[in-house]
Length: 457
Image 1 (cartoon, rainbow, N blue to C red):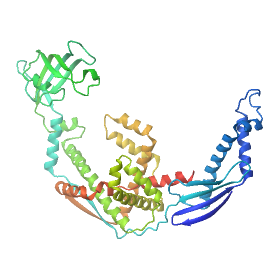
Image 2 (image 1 turned 90 degrees about the vertical axis):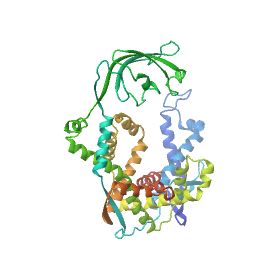
Image 3 (image 1 turned 180 degrees about the vertical axis):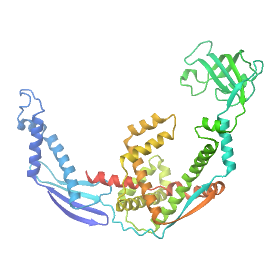
């Protein structure tokens, strides 16, 4: 194989690659030898079909398959030989091919730019800490108590009122006919919340334990069985019990029911949860401060094909008129994302940062624990979508890079209360700032993996 640089302009390099006909002929003979063991033709014993016969019948398709394989192998070797860092998919332009001829083609490559990172020593950013006021913690605690009400039996002659819990069995029918799911046992309803069927609760107001009650209701429009959607339904209900709310003591016993050690621990957990919610948004602000300075202080030539691909990804769900209307802004945003992705990736590589499979698995487990009741669904999502795990790995990689940069810059710490946090977040999220776009980058890990993947082709 002979490789020469035919032209080099900006980030685009064109290589001329020649594979001599003898190498191609050798590959053809190897392929024919493989096929001889597999091909079965009438008049020949299995494995005994002469290569010349196989070639006469399948020559063109075999040649095409061999050349395709040679193009993949030699283009990758050519790129490695010239030590090029590829951005995106190279283009192949065949100049000469055919049996008995040298294979001559050109390889058009958009390369990643050479990046000179500047020192981050003079960069500044604010790291926020949020102090949650006792009043907010108490309000949240009351909310938790309200969501976990305890009930006690009412006297048998006492009627149900809003706020009470009614336990009942029911048998339902549509036009006098039963249907799948038309019976229920031990159903519990807190009156006034209207969580069963619209208007159902209010018909239970006034019932007593042991009473029989006929209720009318309309099945929902999104009922699983279309033929039952919006159907008027009769419910024959047997009232098993009526309970009233029991005053809940906010004490260590209640805290233990919620999974805490005691009431002090429960309040601490509530404070951490609320603080974490604020910090998630505030950390995005800190990240944006850092990214803005990185972008402003570096000049980088960007491969056009990466810009085009980023725009395509960003706008894939938009209508043509929306794409055209925001064309200029989309291009500007795509360039910003690509630029930041390349800069962060360069910094990550320079500092030998990596994300192990164990770290990805640990993050998935963290997500699973954070979604009680949906553990199986989360796990299956990652098992069935390898790209989701790769995307997660990219996010963790970028997170590592940002954390390392934070340790190098002038990072001031500022403690604020919840009202100040809300004000800062509100300003940050104003539509005219387009923060949700600016705080994103074309994932540095994604850029990195894409480059490696393409360079092997």
